[in-house]
Structures are given as structure tokens and as C-alpha cells.
Amino acid sequence: FFSGASFLAWNRMGNVRGPWGPGALPTEFINSQHNLQMQILKRMKELDITPVLPGFAGHVPEELRAKFPSANITLAPNWGNFPPENCCVRTLEPSDPLFHKIGMLFIQEQRKAYGGLGSSIYQMDTYNEMQPRSG
Image 1 (cartoon, helix red, strand yellow):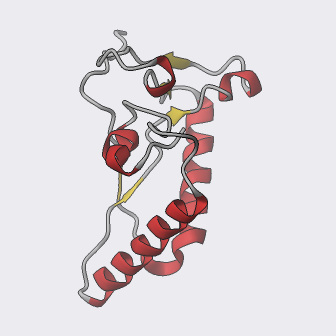
Image 2 (image 1 turned 90 degrees about the vertical axis):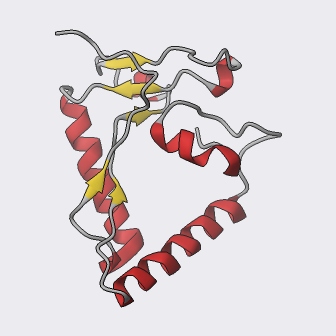
Image 3 (image 1 turned 60 degrees about the vertical axis):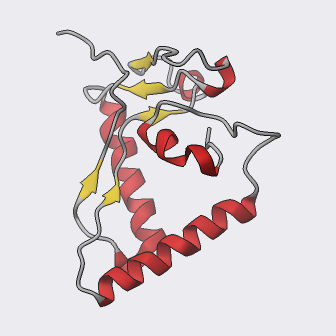
């Protein structure tokens, strides 16, 4: 589900997925990203800067559908003609009750991971290639 270093921004926006390389991301890479984030948050606190951390934007792995078959999940289009294993992220619709539940769990886990270094300001971003549903 997580992309390699060159694609982290796109992965966080939800328009690509997968490692884009030979195999899954190494645990060492994930841990080093966490350590870097901790250093950044500590420095922001020293400078009295309010951090804005990512919230849950609804991007979910395809395996979620097997566990929650009635969840309202949209498959993103393949906007860049990427290989199927690297595109077409699933997005849980914000109107689905599971969105709120996962969103709250996401923030709880983030607070545990970052301790008192976070804030109450979050950003969520879906990429602009996504066609919104019409009501």
C-alpha cells in the first residue's frame, strides 16, 4: 500500500500505491521516516510553530472490502496509465460511517506515535485527477 521515497507525496494524496520497486518498503525506511518526523515536530515545538499533520482522507487498501463488504468504497481511475498494482487507490466515502470510525482511530494512533508533539489541526488531500461523485 505504501510507495517508495520518490512517490511519498503522491501516495499521501492517494493517487498511487505500492512500492514502485522490488518488494515492500523496508522497515528501516519506515522507521527512519518516523524518526525524522519526530525531529521535525520537536523542532517545530521549540520554535512555537503549530504543526499540521495528515488526517484520514479515506484512502484504504483494497483488502478492506473483504472485511467490510458493505462499505462505500470508490475505485480511483488509472489517470496515468500506471501498472494496476501501482494505481487505482480505493477511497472510502466520507458519508460512510466507517470513515468516521477509521478517522478517529487514525488520529488516536497518531497521537500515541507523536505524543504531545501534534496539534488539533489536520489536513486531508485527495488528488485532483479524482472525479467526485455527483449527488
